[in-house]
Length: 232
Image (cartoon, rainbow, N blue to C red; front, side, top):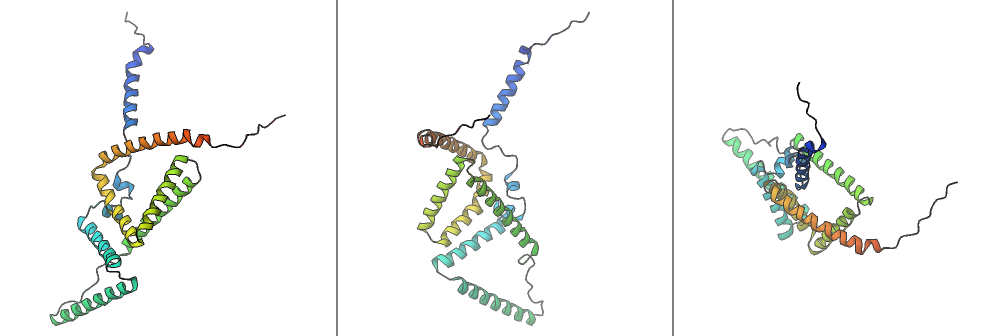
């Protein structure tokens, strides 16, 4: 007769321990991402620019922004004067080019479609609208007070931004924000593991600080008496 083999709960203990250990290891992995950085940024042309997929295009945008900041903040151009000078030099350049093209029997210059492409403008507007809607929705959710820790963090961050804004002008602050948006995603994608490790350590320190603040300050705030409802 074939032997009957009986299983007990102790036979499944190694598998349970293995699964528990694997789950604990997975949960300790800092900032596990289900999507790539490119997908999180929208996965379109804007994400390619922010992640420096095309270095010539991204470098050109950075150089243009740096030039604009230099003209406004260092040379102290105003907007009307700058636009007038740009239009003036552009018209002179196109006039000389068209006149020389007629002398050598060539076609006059044509403005490239990529500069005034409707598709590019729609992608930029769509990306801006989606980010703005997400920002407003997140801000409303934080302001509702559901997560007190996040609410206090945002308040402190806004106060730091206001202090920084009071020490520099609007153009410099705007250029600094552009530099952060234009460079930090690419740097994060390159050094993602190291940044996640540092952020995880910082998050642990903030959690400890919040727990101390909660126990020493927030819990000592007097609250109104609660009335017990009587039911017949």
